[in-house]
Image (cartoon, rainbow, N blue to C red; front, side, top):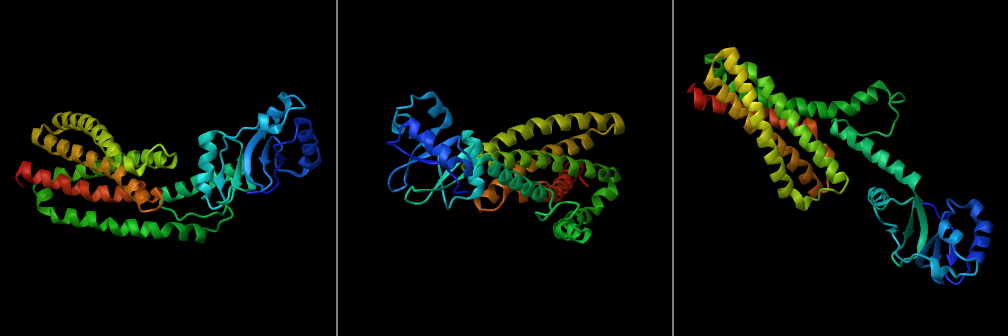
Length: 313
């Protein structure tokens, strides 16, 4: 915020306003938008340079000013302020205190800096990297490693759950070794589906297109999408397995596991970011790495349980 703004009085004429702007405008952040204050410095109107240029010189400011004012409070979060610029397509935003007195303005260039910083932070969190403000090349190799290693350790250790699940089903893939070859496909497909959903949900939350109250509405949409996608993938895989292995039951096992995995992945991709938002956390932390790790374990569990039931192993 800056306090370098042009303020006018409502009883000034347009000609007097131009004289005031010429007198003090050289040191101000912007002269395109001027603010009309009363004797208590409360914000009562906004007038632009266009309004002044098109009005008669003897017309009063109160007759041409816009009283429908978009403003923010001094205690408002900077991310909310940046979203206000985007929502109303404005280039400058007045900042008022609790008594509606004008204390400063924020210009679009500062808002863009905030938006860029927030986007960079979200990108790093979505990639499981601790956010940093430093330049890539100016940051040391050790610092880069430090910012990445924590999440990598967490994700690596959590992947041990998947290994434990596979170990419990040694008898299953000992009886039918070909089952093991489908594990990477199921895990990758589930991770990719979860990433797709979480990316769109996180973007929707960031753009205020999606609210936390829309959880069940968004979830129902993702489930329907998952059904369509899962069935198409399952049918294609069943055809491939039938041609390659001539094994209808194996195709059914993989198909059921695939549909269930896709539904689970897309549901988690929807629920986890919105849950994080509800808990006042950054939804970006529930992005691809975490969802992929959870889906990997669940997809293997689903696959072998379906295989045991249908193939009787």
